[in-house]
Length: 257
Image (tube, rainbow, N blue to C red; front, top):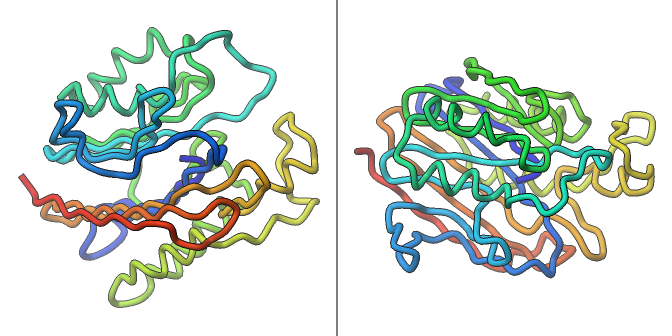
């Protein structure tokens, strides 16, 4: 994922409301979200990066889930690193609690290029970044994550969080409004752009919630809802390259327990 906005324990029906976009090169092969029965992991629901084998967001039928964003800093690049998508997949395969898994990840975190990891184990919810080396217990409220530290107020993340706040004011949650938020392709004003070590032109091009460039952009949007009984509602929409035209949609509901 490259942008995630989420509300934790901020709604009368849902413990978690999450909306996120995965941005990637259009040519990178990807499998749509499904249960991983062919890989002998039938309780894992996730999309798959067919180039490296991992995933960016996934859930397990036991109630755990994880999501990943890259940390943008072109000056820090590791030669031949392991795939960051393995961090999500290995957690879902492990059966561990979030904190136990992070205890295992921390000693090897520097082997990876920069990443942010969100982990939920149905009891606790954590953020970890291998650049800050800090584990954060997520507090109740609205939060966001892009290609910097948790809640770094990049324009697109601030906009996403504000839009999520407005959506939560309605009596009934409208999932379509969450997808509408994720389709927002308005770029940030130049004066508000973050400085991350890439050109101003590129920074502008990828400053919107939904990215559309010639070779790279928002490949899919995911809305993840976890109700207070532990039921998981997972919807993924994938798009035609460089457009907000829906190519496919997958929807799954995982019963609690």
